[in-house]
Structures are given as C-alpha cells and as structure tokens.
Amino acid sequence: MVFEIGSTSSNPMGNKLTALLINNDGAFQLMHKTILKRLGVESEVTENWIEAVNLYRSGAVFDLILINMEMPFMGALEATRALRAMGVRTKIVGVTSYSRKSQRQAFMDAGMDDILKNPLNFTKLIPLLEEIDNRPLFMD
Image 1 (cartoon, rainbow, N blue to C red):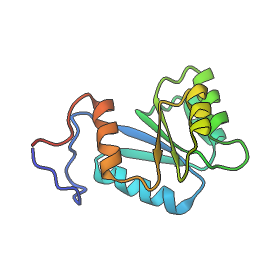
Image 2: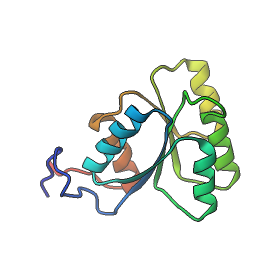
Image 3: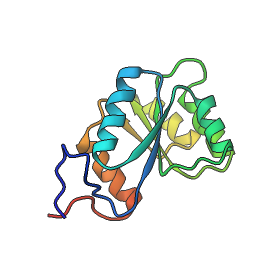
Image 4: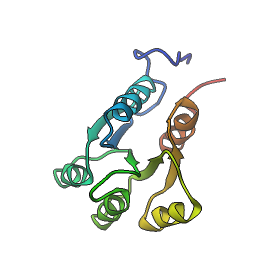
C-alpha cells in the first residue's frame, strides 16, 4: 500500500485507531489533531483531565491518550493517576515542551507509558502508532 503523508483519504493502519488528546492549548490541540488525522487516527479533544475521566466513565475507549504535561489546575500526573485507578490500560503518553529527568521519572511512576517532546510530528508519532497497531504503518 502506498500512503502519502499529506493525504487524508487513505488510512495506513489495518485497524482504525483512536486517540484522546488532553490539552488546554488550542494551537497544540489543532496541530496534534491534524497530524493524527493525516495518519488515519480519529481523535477527540478534552481540555482537562476531569473531562477525560468523564469520557471513560461514560464508556468511551481510546487506543492512545496524549496528555499535555504542562496543564494548570490538576495536571498530567493527577490525570494519569486517576485514569490508572479507574483501570484504564490505554497507552498514556505525556507531551511536553521541556522535560527533566526527575520530572520524567515522576510521570512514569504515575503510570505514563512514554513522554514525547513538542512539537509532535510524523517522525515521533509513526513508531508509537505502529506499536499500538502491532504492524508497520508504511510499506517500504
């Protein structure tokens, strides 16, 4: 299969993947949603962790959660802990503009699976989506 990165009409994945974006920054919401759409991933955006928890309580399920690690109020640590306490086993990936080793360890201890630096792009997301989908997204 040939997939053109700029195309939104082709789906490179065998399964339709879904992502939840927990991010209060409108610019990053739009950018991340656009990149995921171009990769064939349906996404939903919440602006805080309470909305995300409520989505899961209502029965929503996602293949991937991308969470802004710099959210005000109750942030990514609290969101990750709350989701894990509910039994959510979805891959949770923190997204940050900066990261110190001590900060990274605290997030991993809270239950995050990985941390990626902003800005997200195809190079960072494709291996992550391939891992979730259990197959290469693109044929050589």
